[in-house]
Length: 266
Image 1: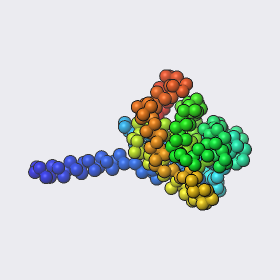
Image 2: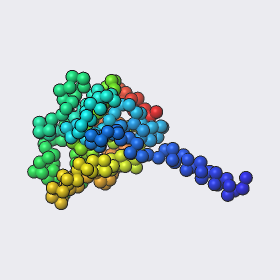
Image 3: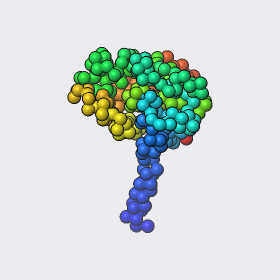
Image 4: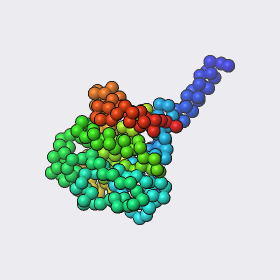
């Protein structure tokens, strides 16, 4: 075999391996037109396989779903719902799963205040900061709630567990990123998984963005820099060891090991 032919065959083998490991976020979308930014977490490439399917769904708020979307999610196995929104959001918009006896419902807010109010202190902060800066605050100040959420995800055993915030990009995106870090997903794929939220909710978000002040429009997008800021913080403070972060915020070693087992790549 000539040297050139050998190199060509090696190149084909490399391209095949890359294609097998490539990540397409669109492959995770739940196919129903009434949903908002609703995706299966499974299928993400990880260092030792792919993130397990059939466990978790991330989404925008079900109060923004249309048609029979809620019934559809129940039909594919959603049995647990974690609402990450603040109390004012739930009082104002409700949640169709909240009083459903067939679903275990939890409300664990990852926002203190009301993100719909531009005068809210956090929203005022975001006039001059990136969303990623808010994500760092979330990790620093609400670590006990994050641990509680992950323990629910660890222990639920019946069907899918759906977790959501308002648009499925910020609070939801942080929880998804933590799960993917624990499972061994790459930084690049985690950023991509975050970034496409705006693409998948664009039809819903663009009319809202048009009404925002110029310095607040970014709060309704999912610019890559936001997740980069969060991951840079985790690299700087925890050497990207998200398990250490969880232990420092109240998760026990046995709980962490159980969560890692639950997330073991397929």
